[in-house]
Structure formats: structure tokens, C-alpha cells
Length: 383
Length: 88
Image (cartoon, rainbow over all chains, first blue to last red; front, side, top):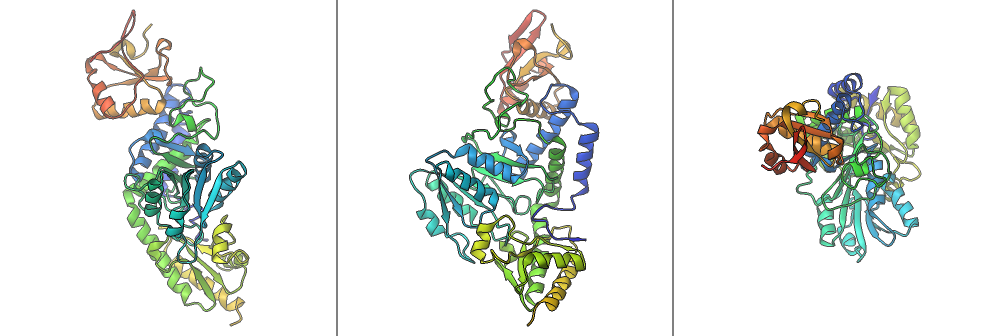
């Protein structure tokens, strides 16, 4: 099997991640914060270490403001439903994943005003239109960092600065970039950062988080036991407890922490350069195959490690199925939970095939994938 | 009644949350100051059920904890007759 679906979830994981999960499950399996006994404290320390590691990675310094969630979608929902109320206005892009598009649709039904900044191919985010979209009641801007369909990066530095000039918060969805591109909360005008644990950060599925900058108060998405202020009915108002009701995925978070430490040791830039080299090879190879159409920027440096394409008019899901059946190449096809992006690309019907290598992918695997596409194109396109 | 390492160490810190207690642990380790986690005595009840005790003669470390941004809800000297706020 040649796994090229790392944009959905990275696989394989570094050995250190597996070892950390095993260590947590076998030797440190208490419930963090539930009692002060040794088993609970061991797990609490693992979780706290992961918060500190994430602070280092994202250039922030308060581990209390790192909130663990099940995934990036959960983190985005926490931020959106925790901040926006009836009468508020929010601005977003036109290439959002459903993790943002659907909560915003639901919030719209509750009286939140939503504006979508228009985009075109090659200009996915119109900064001029964006600047004009602000209203007196604009509370939040939310965008992804990179498209999960084409990998295209948005100008997040400018988006955040403009948001702040208008007195709005900026929520960044780093689903495709955390662990792949440097994200420095010390220099970016980002107020809320949502990230998955199981993609670029190399942790297991079921992990993710939200970093909340000081001065922002979010209503909890869920209420319940936190192991603190147990004598009171009201939810604690301090972080992370306020937003972390219920038992955390301790073993998973231990694995996530190990993933982050692995990235810090290897270097975000080193990992990305290797992945971009794979993408360049894929892009150039696919470009030479008659009938193959590529999407997004040809500059791999301006994309997260994703290469999106179609083979003639062949349905993307069918193409993906054939690639797996014939050559064991695993790709993601269809709409990638991002109908808005496909609407802009004009691929709502066909979808696209998405290759997303990791730094663990070998050059031989890239060659094999290209050869497989070549053969599928020859068999299925009448040129 | 004093229990655990508190009988020996005699200084105790309480916190609003477990993450603050865990942050304090790191400061204690950095300054090589011995410490132990113990359940927060009921008379000192705070947001966090975990308290840290440490040798009273190292009470100046409280300054370092505060400098490091650790939030405390209380700092006490533990005597047989009760808990008394530490002045350092």
C-alpha cells in the first residue's frame, strides 16, 4: 500500500508516538485531575507536558490556554459557538472546509450574520473585498490557513492584521498546516488557533486543540466535571478547565505530545521541504501525463503538501478506486468535506483526486503513484 | 492534622487549577527544590484538589513561582495548630 492521504490523517506515525501511547496506557493510566493520587498525577503530567510542547511549537507561553479537543472540528466549533451570539457578524473565506462552513450555517439560523469573501482561482482570497466586508458588529474573522482541496495558502498575516484594524478577532484553522508550516502566535495576528492532533502534528486520531489568546472568553461547548471546584454547580471560569469538561483522551494526548516533540526535533522546515519536494515531483510528473488536469498553485512553496488533479472526465472517486485496485495507491477523492472550495474550482460534479505525501513517503512510492496515474489515464482517456 | 510530606516540609501552596500546580512543579524542579504533591487540606480548599508542599526554609521560591506566572490561591506554613499565611 502506498499511502498518499496524509492530508486526511498522517500515517505512519513516528515510533516515539506509539511508544508514548503505550507508556501512558500501560504505566500511567490514571485519570488526570480526578484525585491527587499518583496515577492521576502521572497522567496529568503527561498532558501538561503536551501543552508545554504545543506552546513551544506555536510560539506562545501559557500552557493553561491550550485547550484539548477531539479534533480540529471540535476546536473550531468551540471557538465559533463559544464566541458568536445573535446579532454578531463573522467574515469567512469561500474555500472553507465544512468544519467551518457548517457551524457558520447553523449560527446563521440563530441570527449570526455571515459574509463570505469571494475568491477566484489563483486569487482565493480577495483582500480588497475582505476589507470592505467589515461591519460595525463584525466580531470575528475565520479562515483556514491552507485549502484541504488544493493546498493553497491564504494570506493569513494580512487577514489577521486587517481583522485587528477593524477590532475583530481572528480564528485560524490550521488543519493542513500545523506541524508543516511555522505558526508563530507571537508575531501573527491570530487570536484563536484550531489544530488537529492527528495530521501534521503526528499524534493519534481523536486529538486536537484550540489555543485561546489572553483576553478572550469563550462560552463552553459542553459543561461538566473538570476535577476542580467540585463543590460548585457553576462551571469553572478559568482555563483550561472551563473548556475541558469530562475525561480527556490522556493516552492520545501523550501521543500527540510525542508527535510535537518529534517535529520540534526534526524541524518543521526540514519536514516541509521534504514534503514539498515530493509535491514538486508529483506536480511535474502529472503535468506530463496527457489528459491530467491539475488544480491550485504550481508553486509548491505556496501550498500545503497537497496535489489535486483529475484524469480527463473520469469521476475522481472512480479514478481513486482504480489507483488503489491496480497499484495500491491510496488517495482521497470526491469533495473532501469542502463543497465551497469545489464550487470555486468548478469541480462539484467530478470532485478531484488528492495526493498528499508525508515526509515518510519514499521517492519510489512517488514514482509508483505517477506510473499508476499514467496507466489509468492511458486506459480511460480517449485522446 | 498534618499528613504525608507536609509533616516534614511544613510549607504548602494551593492553586486555582491543576495546570497551575503542574506549572509550579516545573519551577520547583528547575530550582532543584524538593516538593511533594498532596491532596489539598479541606481547610485550604481551593479550585484544585492538589497542593504542593515543600521545605519551609525554601520559601523564597514563591517569588520565582510568581515571576514564572504561576497563579497561587494561597501559601501557608503548616503547624500542628493550623495553617498560617507565609510572609516572605
